[in-house]
Image 1 (cartoon, helix red, strand yellow):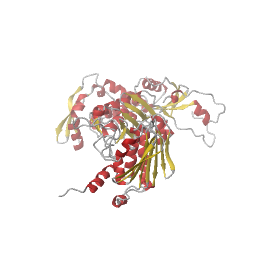
Image 2 (image 1 turned 60 degrees about the vertical axis):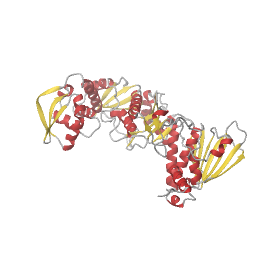
Image 3 (image 1 turned 180 degrees about the horizontal axis):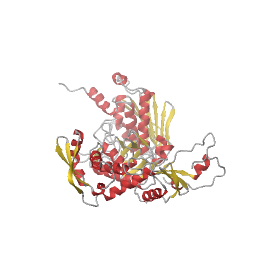
Image 4 (image 1 turned 45 degrees about the horizontal axis):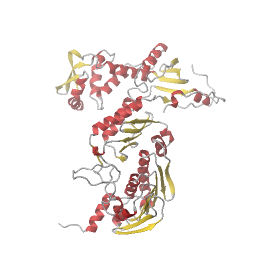
Length: 543
């Protein structure tokens, strides 16, 4: 057993902070943000191994403090307080290791000037060798780290390709743009501009990072402790890679509880297995989170994660409830040859025009043509009615408890969910030997005209979904809902009236849209009409 030599210990510690060019970019950008910069420019050459430069117009470093800049644990961001064993961090950086680690891993050059100071200071550092001189420069700070890992050949050989590193750097800066959208940002790679952002709101940042089509499909939210944007239900992905969170300005790797809170807020508006786009800035008291649990500071610990998740869910649900979520109808394409014309709370008043294919309702309202999927709309209305009635009457006790066969997985879920199911009137008792005894049903469900009702209820309640109540109601709303061939004008009018009374009329319980709309303007353009009337687009203008 022996103590490592100081130069080896320094290299190991530097490697914890700077293991790749991406780390240099992150640390320098955080320093620029902490300095209050409104403009941040990043230049990367050779995948960052040759050179990383970050220029900002922030507060700069006073000349007398510049020699301390590359010293380990030297910082102006954290004041030593009582030895309580805890930190109250209000800045992105706080360890005082970024410039020190960069000097240990490469060659560091820093030029800085506070706005009120005459003349700038220039610092060059490599390892423990530091040189400071005077120069002239605009207010702010420019930091250049070059020849990264040139003195560490083993680490240099394990670096990713330049293209892969640039991809990750671009993605990282995209996240900073999303969460700090009010700043000027510019990323240049080998002299080629890759990302440019002018000051904007969250929607403008989404346009910069993901394009204007995505930006046009997001809704803003601004509640105490939660600000940002979430996508409309039609903008989803199979992965969660566009769900972005920041805590007190720090982009983080979100704990699953926060991602789940957003998805739960969409409820049935979001098809199973999909995720929305979101950019959410969370604000918590400095003493209620700890960013000091991971070298990259992207993983943070929250003192009351369930409360934060609940606040996120409520904010997202409120944003969705406050906007009409009708989807645009598919674009019309003129047929190649003439064909005879075919012989279809928050919800608008629609006038029924007709029924198409005994399944779709054609209606007009707010100057637009609306197409209603009668099955999905009826299913939504039944789902909400069942939900309202579920707790209004005592559970119905079956005269003779019914024995049902369960799989081992269903039996395990029964043990896990039994109390929850009883809470809304469904009592299922494990009878042993793969059997269960159904004793009570919610009164609202008992009279539904559904074949094999008891089996359907038990099978759905013990399925693998996360919310058995929602899944049971959705299944039982689907089975008796109007099917193709059952629709006529009278039933169509009743469906429109029922949809108008729904709290969430825009999607069925399984996430499919209930209505599509087509504006008169788009219809006229599809027919090639000239001099189209300037028709207001109704709810299309609502964002």
